[in-house]
Image 1 (tube, helix red, strand yellow):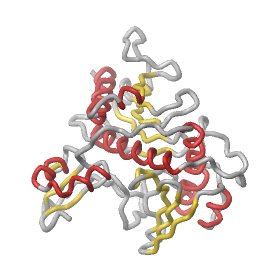
Image 2: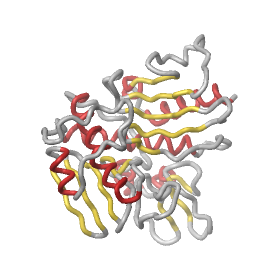
Image 3: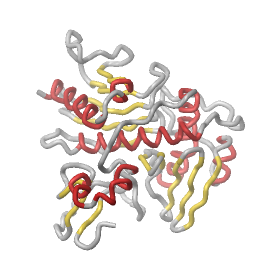
Image 4: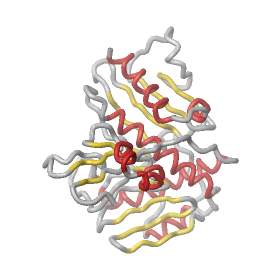
Length: 307
């Protein structure tokens, strides 16, 4: 699409499989160390951003917007009956999607994928991802779609057993693996948009000049939220994440989870369910530019902790 002389960076996993640690996964926004090509990136540390390019190539706008690379607009509305469907996708994420990768290489971190979430590539260029109300199983150039019915049925299609090794303390219970999951296509689509937005924001936060020891973003299947840690390990480190919601929050929210003490007299540190700050989905939904609102919220927390 870009033509000669350009190297594209996106937010999604790409083959080939990475077989060494610590991540066993590609870094989608890594720079071109050779300098042979102009890197077009969703983050500002590239040679050019996708937004820069779109001013010259407006025909790429729909593609860039769909993949959260540029021309980012408002977030969609939260679907009806969202919490129950979200929790069903959460169970699927840790019990089946992450488990398919864990059994291959011991790693269970997930990522944003086009219109959904899934694994980095593993094994024989294999990927398992969710798109709407389907599980997409890709191996090299062979792709098949699996309807989401029960945990047991989807796992059997992938040749595994549902597992709980990727679950964490706040995960919903595994429950009856033969019970039909309460997923809905519109919630699957919404989660894909939320995770794409989240990845765009977190990768830009990670690339902040002078940022102290930033991790790569991961979608932790036990918590079911994209997050990274960044900041001074001695005093200012925190986890910055984009939760799709949980037992304390029906709707998505952003959070800064401080690893150390915070000044509770400062209204920024407003969260009562954990040690930190949160920004509700309603604030993001009111904005035409939720990307900038989210980045400002995260950087405000970082500056407070690492000033």
